[in-house]
Amino acid sequence: MRKQKILVTGAAGFIGGNLCERLIGEGYRVVGLDNLSVGTLENVRPEVDFHAVDIRRKNISWFFRDVDAVFHLAAKNCLPDCLASPHEMCDININGTVNVLEASKAHGVKKFVYADSSAVYEDLDDFPSRVEKVAPRGAYAISKHSGAMFAKMYETFFGINVTILRYFNVYGPAQDYRRVTSPVVGAFIMKMLSGENPTIYGDGNKRRDFVHIDDVNDFHLLTLKDRRSDGRVFNIGSGANYSISEIYDLVVDLLGLEMPPKPIYQEELSREAEVTLVDISETLELGWKPKTEITDGIRDSVEYLRHVMDKDRNLLAEDFGAI
Ligand SMILES: NC(=O)c1ccc[n+]([C@@H]2O[C@H](COP(=O)([O-])OP(=O)(O)OC[C@H]3O[C@@H](n4cnc5c(N)ncnc54)[C@H](O)[C@@H]3O)[C@@H](O)[C@H]2O)c1
Image (cartoon, rainbow, N blue to C red):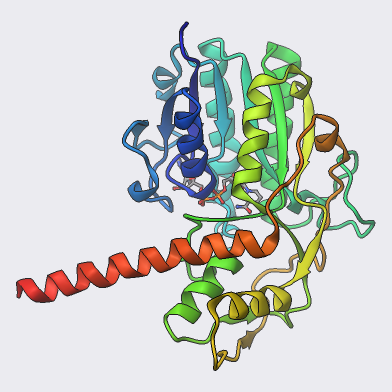
């Protein structure tokens, strides 16, 4: 039987790289697109038919030949960058999305999974957030929601089966720790492993709903197999939240640090929501549920980043050895 062919945009990024790996493991053929603006080739498995292209390129439809389903993950998603460069953000998150939708339409793609964000709930304070009501406020949230609306439009007018996934704080191995404002779990671990003081933006009381990448990938697979996911929006979180300070303490515990470093508190960079907490009743209804406990999930990230640091140290030692 012909293996299904899945195209993933943002394939060299955190979620995309992990998703491609999982899809390969499940026997799918995988095409990956990424302009490597943020993502790295280290995240791309050799089995992926990878192309370093920008989703805004006009002739990308060539890559969509014989594709059964698309996961559209490529986006500009660093909040301060989005605020600083709104034109570029819209160009990638809205025009780029339309370009990917056009290419999908041109090649009769049956299924389109769009990466939306919990940021669309940022101006609401009734928790847990349910899928029916959104109130995007910041530039990033508005651009992501616009992309989702375009995806719905292609479903209505052109018959592509669309599933919108609103990710909450996804964490796990291969999350980008190199950015100036990198996602919190990896940033804390990396700083502490390097003997530096991690930065907390704000007072550490913001609460976030964290969900592990393995659980997210379980749902990704479900969207390919279960037709009940067609035409629907799902919240992808765990239904429990933790403050940034609690995550800090968890990382300290897991690293077993005798002298835990003190965080450096800095002013918030963008006005993010105080709380995120998700209602996952719709995802549970489809038989999915998050399995990874936060401690196990963070331990996973610690192991991954320890390995990355050891590799970097060995490379550095080899470089010095060669001089
Ligand atoms: N990680 C999360 O917690 C989270 C939460 C909510 C929403 N999301 C959404 O999920 C998706 C994936 O997030 P991630 O955490 O893996 O981010 P990421 O930054 O690791 O991955 C995004 C990838 O898109 C690529 N990219 C950016 N602009 C591009 C362009 N013009 N053409 C081609 N490739 C381009 C980047 O190089 C990067 O590899 C994004 O759409 C993001 O908005 C993520």
